[in-house]
Every structure is written in C-alpha cells, then in structure tokens.
Length: 435
Image 1 (cartoon, one colour):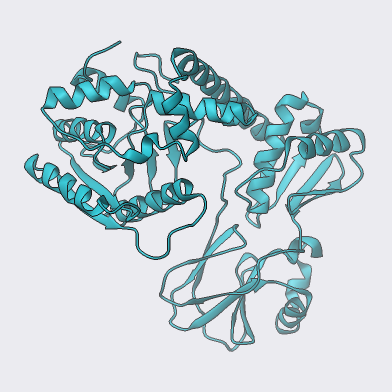
Image 2 (tube, one colour; image 1 turned 90 degrees about the vertical axis):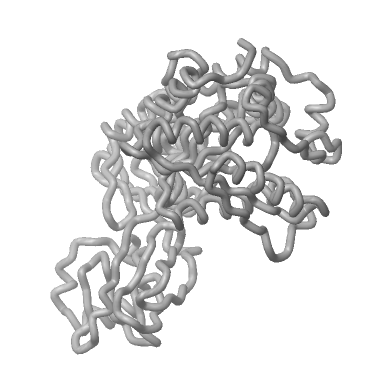
C-alpha cells in the first residue's frame, strides 16, 4: 500500500488499540520528524471527531546545538494547527556511553510523567513498520529469542497510563505522504543516519526491506499466541498471594518445556521484582530440575521454590532484599524491593525495611496473637515493615499496628516490574486483521 494515511484507515488502527473513554484525552510525543508530525495531525483529527483532546509533547534533549530551535519550530507548527503543546527539557548530566538508549529512556520518562500529570491515560508514539523491521533485524543479528524478535508491542501498560503505537503497521513513506497531504513541513534528525549508531548503520546499508517487515509481524503473532498460552497455564496451575508469593501446582512443570520456560520467566520476574528474566540456559536447568526432582528446593533470580505436597511455594529469597527506604507521610509513594509501593497519610518521617527476626520478636512481644499466623519464616522475612526512627509501627501484610503508637495510615499495593500475566502482546495490521 502507498499514499497518505486517511481518516478511515487511522480510525481502524485506533480501534485496535482501544478501548478509549467517550471523549479521549491523548498525549503524543512529537520530535518534529515526519513520523511524529503525521501522527500528531492524524490524532488531532481523530480526537476532535471523538469529542476529545490532544496534548503534543516535545522533548528538548539538548544533545545537539539546534535541538532547542527544533523544539521551538515544532511548537510553532502545533500552534498554527491549534494543537495544545508543551516542550519538556532533559536537564542534568547526559550519558557518555549508550547515548541513544539513554535518550530514549529519558524521553519516555519525561513524556509519561508529563502525560500522567495531566491525568492522560494514553501516550501515543510514532514508531512505524520500518522501525519495527529494523528492531527485528537488530535483535536477530544479536541472536535474540522469540520474544525479542517480536519487536515493539502496539500497547504497553505502564504505571499510570498506556503507551500506544498506532502506526506500527504503516511504512515510513506513507507517513511522509501523509505530511505532504496535510501540507506540513518536518525536520530531519541527522543522528537517524549516523553510522556511529547501530540503527544508523543499518539505515545507511538499506538492507532492511519487506522480508523483515513480514518476519517481524510473524514473530509478533507468535508472541501473542504464546502470551495466551502462558496466561492459560498460570490460570490453571498458579495462585497468587497478597504477600507477594505464588502457590504452584506440580502439574505445571510437566507441561512442554517450550511453554513452561516462558511461564517460569514471568513468575520469576513478578515474584523477584526484576525487570529482566534469567538466561534461557538457566531457565532450562530450573525447569528440568523441578520436573525431575520436585521434592527438592531450587533458587534462581532472587526467588526460591519451596517444595510442598503436590507443588511449590514460589517466594522472594530473604537474601539480597532492598535495604531501608525512607519516605515522608503525606508525600510521594515509595517502591520497596521492586515489589511493593507504600505511602502513609499521617505526617512524619518513616522507613520501610524487611521484616527481620529482630523486628518480628518485637511485634510478637507487643501482640502475642501474631504467633497464630500460619506463615513460614522464609516468607515472613521478605515482607515490608514500617518504622519511625527505630520504633516498629506497622507490618501491613499482617495487619499489625504497634500498641500505643499513632497509626501512620499506611497504604500498600503490590508492584511488579513485569506482571506475570501482562496484557497480551498486541498486534495491529493495516487491515482489519487485529489480534
């Protein structure tokens, strides 16, 4: 397909990324390139048709001398179109190595924080089919596994909003044609074809084409199918507990290894609080060991498999837990050990730390009835406790509040870097074929 992206096609692409509220408020990252300018104009028309609003956000990364002027130019273009716009500055020190990766992470953080600060639920980025094909090729060259080869998801759930990529099925030339159809100028970022960077070298080689586009789409469909199978196995064989552990049925590890390994990877990240899974070789050894010797405990990625009758208790290891984290009552919530987010309503200075044996004995002396709680010490030691100075105030999971002390009104929610059962990998194509 060629030619600009019209309203009907863009509406189908957005439908595949729903649901949206009745009058959607959407944020879009706009660098000024043809891709993001096309997306901003398409979204402006789409949100207006839905009775919604659009906020365009431009990050001035400060990595090139003319980045500020380019951001100002984007602001002028948005103003001419009547599109609400803000410039976000990336302040502070810049990385010496891994500049492009550092810039991507900083840009996404700035965009997400700005959107969430306005109560926006959807942040749109302009990655397109050519970007997806390049990502597939780069990961294939690095011998990435099936999940990596699937590339970027069309929908990514973040802490406070959803990141959406409506243009993943659309090629770069169609986005250029879309800008031309709108009569819209754009800027060219010279770093996009800088041979210093791997992606720049790949673009200069002009070796990525239709074959990579097809391969990336096939890999994405395979990942979507795998996500569905992983979710099914977890629903049948895993029971998640509020203390951050999982009860596993022994039948789980009797399933085919190519299914059990991604299940194990998801579980380990969810329980251990790590953003990255163990190596495929380590996962294979774990699955084989649990299958062949189910009565023996195993550890991997900061997690522990404790044998039970007919299965295991999968929990965080007590060693290498995060140290104490201080926070202010009535202030911003804090994350502890990558697994729990805590806050306190009552004003004061607090500390969250692991419930070690010393703190447990203090709690027992204050509230002897706690001894009736059926919980192994290995699990209890992984729970967070809240202190004021050196005084134990609360153990949220055990509903414990210290006698004679003011209630800090602690709120706590489980938090995992990667959910064990995330949203299924979304694949959207330029036709009505939407997974």
